[in-house]
Length: 203
Image (cartoon, rainbow, N blue to C red; front, side, top):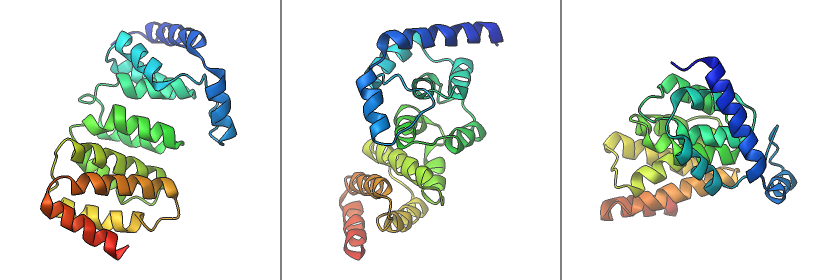
């Protein structure tokens, strides 16, 4: 296990590199839209992905980066965390500490869809009372369905029940994520397409 000093030094170097990559106009645009991070350098996902590729997968560094109340640190943490090493309990903590739609979407795309227990977590989240959990769960399912992962009968019933509720949600982001996942579900085959159509008719 790397020493705390080593991790601290790495984080310091990463933060210094953010200064070179920062984009003030993107950060200002986010603030104008009400997305308020403690610290936001406005760095694009593409630049952060390049940084993540340069660092490589690193569990301890990802844990430390997530603890920083900085937009780029949290996104980078989701990119370098090895999906086969992070425990479900840690994922639950990260989900609880997720406070913006952007971080929920980034975590779903960069990490959660690759978890060995991704379907279980996604179904748990879409049944949650918390809208960010629902949104994240539907994003994960969208990606699983896109990759051709078919749910079992119980999963189908659970998904259709929750997507029906979500499509009536007052939260537009949840509705969009649910509809996107339903479209991906429909693409799995003719039976799934008919099930999806029946849900849309009911809505």
